[in-house]
Image 1: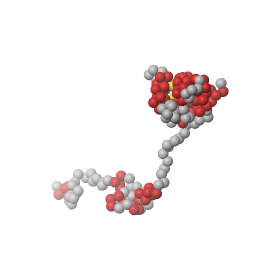
Image 2: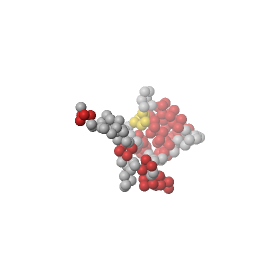
Image 3: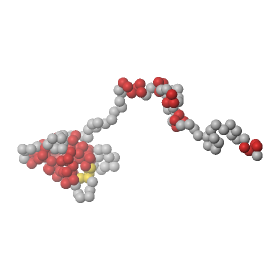
Length: 171
């Protein structure tokens, strides 16, 4: 059963994906779904995300939010027949496990910094006009809150009042 230990390694990699606190013993539904998608078990035709969610909820312990490796194997037995129709349950299970061997979580759709042509033009602070221009210093660095707001004078006088600070002199 050499492929089992290989499968357990894959299970652990996906169980800990995106969760720094995860031990690798239990897998969430989200990671279970990701694993089956990345490994090609969930193909959107024979096996859909709905199928995966249904099977996940069927094999997990009632009230739990994760499945362990034994429950994962049970889920694979449920799904393999759907994915490989016409094969015996053992053959279908082997085929599903073969898809998973040596797989790692793929970072598909991870946001990368864009370098599209329009971005440089839009972020060039030297081309800003009006009140927007005042939000940046000469180097193009933002002034923070000072560039955004009129700094309020907390003296208690009305803005245009000329005789501020003269009250004590008269009385």
